[in-house]
Length: 450
Image (cartoon, rainbow, N blue to C red; front, side):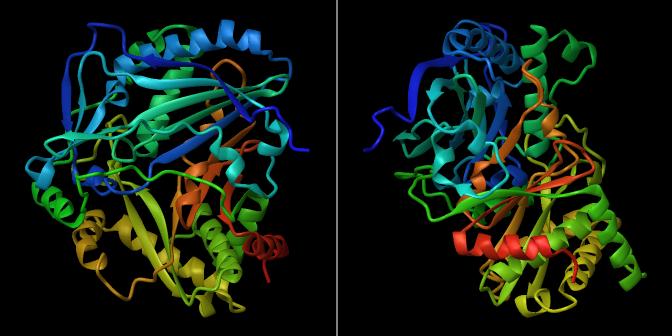
């Protein structure tokens, strides 16, 4: 007999705004880095915290008020999170993030009946389970002159009585990249712990909203390529049931060093043998052996802030990342020297892109041609995240996360990467595959080097 206990019970839904009168109405035009993500899926994050004695009463009386208060103060400094993305019909005007007095973030507080220990495991789990913990972005408003008004951020905090809490977030990717999102969370968790923003102000780590990326021709080129139909537009949404499972795989520092040594012996002239290079090569080969593609592309995001001319500060708000693309036949990746071939390809492409002063801009300028290049495989595996951002340090006052999940992997062929929970020299990879593919992936991953 099916259980009559609901999976999720909403306890409260609130609209959280910056403190009144402290933030002026502001519009921030999108750059080509932001425009690139206009029609792409939102980002969905889950942070799980283990609080074995937490009760629903404690949650509603102490944690809920603190999270709302700390988020409000955070929004004073990161006000675009409370705003909306505006897309104008027929590109009559460049899209923008607009905040006006009274704009707010929808925050849902709920009680969840799912198995907390199962959700926070590393083993394969049904993807559908996680969707209960992810907030939807509010409905798009496009009733006025075909203007599309898109909410950009929402939060859901769920209690698992006697086990812990999850903090789920949905973010429109045109609002922020991984670095901006990390900066936002770093501030929110700090304010939640200490009750004020004094450390933020003392360290002068406020976000920079000036559009330091100024390439009008690229903005127009990306607007022309990115087709967003303003009439009846709706955001992509996660929905079940799916036929996928998700699991997390850890490459330890010792194993990564072994991979690097193996590559250095086999290809002593390779100019770029980093932990990222060899780890991504290893994961790529495991994926190639678990899927049936003839060719695959593998994409690694690059933070361009320090690589622009002149460099852009790390506190720059918005998107400032580009992609390093590698392409290979599956037969090469699955061969006896597949790992070496993948490491060589990724290492050479990263070196070429990062060592050339104009490398970043060169790649961006040819992207329009690549987007219609029929030689690019239909399967493009995209890395989400970076181990340089220590997400396991995000502490709201309940200790470090027990587990982090990027639920937006489920939209396509994405792989997440983060610094390890136990040791930040380890690397965690989140993988979402069909069950039979996951079975093959686990087998190949556990075999190690041939």
